[in-house]
Amino acid sequence: MIPRSIQLVAGRTGQEYNQRKSRKGAFWEDRYHATAIESGEHLLRCIVYIDLNMVRAGVVGHPSEWTFSGYREIQEPRRKCALIAYERLRELTSFATYEELRAAHSHWAEEYLGDGRGVRDSKWTQSIAVGSEGFVDRTKDQLGIRAKARKVIETAEAFQLREPQVAYRVNSGAKNDDIGAENSYFWDINLNIPTT
Image (cartoon, rainbow, N blue to C red; front, side, top):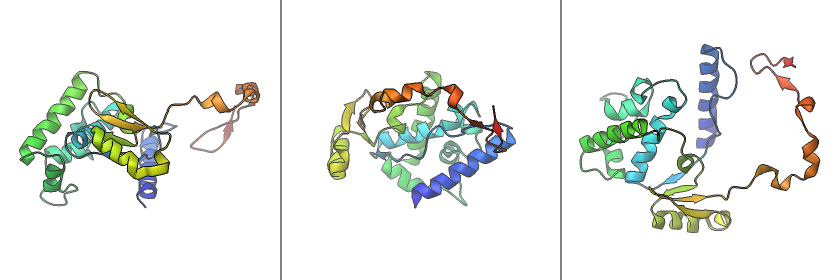
């Protein structure tokens, strides 16, 4: 149910934005992808990464400028119509107080923006699991046969469970080398009228 809901929201959001800005093409870079994230610091860093999506897309210069951002929701908690269970988020991120969580969240967002790490990070977009070595190993064990070809990768900030990267053309054979632009047929996305 969640993947279908995300697909619907993502599709409508992309259509609306493209229509408002008179642009064409993909709004989101990839399809919905679920990643298991260990609670604690890994979870908060993932939240910060998501909060920077509109900055990476060039829509805003800072996540606080995006009206519907999680950044604003965390930094300026609502009393009514809250979207976040603030106390539960504090527990999951292992902070003693919500003020400490807010300070760390703001600090990491500024750190990512300031040192150029605000760019796309495959750790969050392509991993099956991110966290400590024990968390990633347990996740791999729980996946059983579905994790057979996946590898555990260690980086400076976390361990990741990833699929091996294979070049697209490896299994396609030589016959596909004949396909070129002259055999392509392009469509105008908004009007569905063929163009050349």
